[in-house]
Every structure is written in C-alpha cells, then in structure tokens.
Length: 248
Image (cartoon, rainbow, N blue to C red; front, side, top):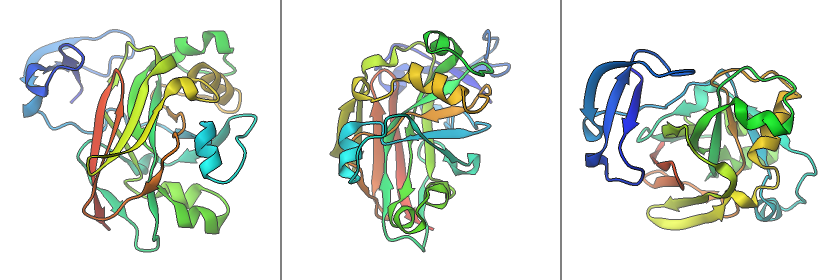
C-alpha cells in the first residue's frame, strides 16, 4: 500500500500519521480516507526503481580517500533493483567478501520520462528525494576492476524511510552513524556535480523513467560494516534510514 506521511518535519514518530493513497501520486494525490499512526505502520522501500544509477567519487574528499583524483565528469554505474531493501531490513554480508562498506547518500527519485534534459530544467523532472546507502564490497571492487558485482548484491541498496517531495537539495547535511558513532558528516553543497547537473548528464546517456533513482555520491568517511552492527544514514529535511547488518 502507498501512503503519505503527514505531520511537521522533525516531529517524533508518534506525532506523525500515514494516509493511504489510491495509487502512487506521480501527478496528484488521491486519498482513500484510511489513516494510521506512523508507529503502527511497517515501512518498506518507498520505491522499487526501474533502474538505479550511481555516481562515483562525487565528493572531493571521498575521491581522495579512495586514492585518486575526482573525475572531471560524473562517473556512472548501475545497481540492480534486486539490491533494494527498506528501513529496518538487514544488510546481508556475502561470504566471499571481507570488507563491505557503508556509503550514505542523497537519493533522487525521477518523476517524469527524461531524455536529453537541459540542466536549467532538470529539477522539473525530479519527483522527490530519499535517503540511500550504496553498500559496496570494497575488496571485490578492487579485485574485479569494475563495480557491478561489488555493488550489486541483494540488500546492497537500502532506501527510505520515505520520499520527500518538497525539498531544496542544494545544501543539506548528510551524516552516517555506525552503532551510534558518527562516521560521515558532510553537506550536499560539497557535491562536485549537483543534482541538476546529474539529472541532465544521465538523461543524455540513457532515458530516465519515472521511479528511477540516482544515487548522488557519498562523502568521505566510508568504512566497513560488521555482522551485528547497525548503520544509520540521515539527510537533513528527509529523515534517518537505519538498517541492521547480518551475515548472509
């Protein structure tokens, strides 16, 4: 079931409600009249996208910690939809990897078919924004020399807890905590290629479809996950996406 979260931003969960919608509100929202308190609702991923386009090394400090220069143009890769999980669902560590890293990110949800969109119109094609975690098997990424397997495992793309449709993505705080300890702390104003640039750039490579997700890149501070830990990514103006980590 699709629902709209109602209440003031930043309010505690018990002060929020979820209003049921008749369908996904690409254009206008139509309500059924049913409502529940947010704590009584189990949230799943807010979107299961036709495709997920990731952007690599889009913060200068993260590019530096990866041991190379930042690319002059956006560096694109794809993640499969089967990697998507929602809030509170476990990230499963594959047995063939010995270093699986978290990567907290702002995620863009496309709202309209977009092809060769000029940058000045790009945000018109955005439906909203959610929180993403581009989980990556770092040792496999290094050994393979390309990123598909390392970023493509099931459970390697947590999204949620919901989509914020009214938001300026230009300067938002983004933080990642591991077991409550702050590991990433940055702002989207430090993106090397901002959201409008990314939407336009990707649309000149491939057709973007409603529901597609663009992961805008992770800031510095990436690091390994261990079974039994909990990782939380918070983006200002949206909320916090929390997932436990388990062995596969």
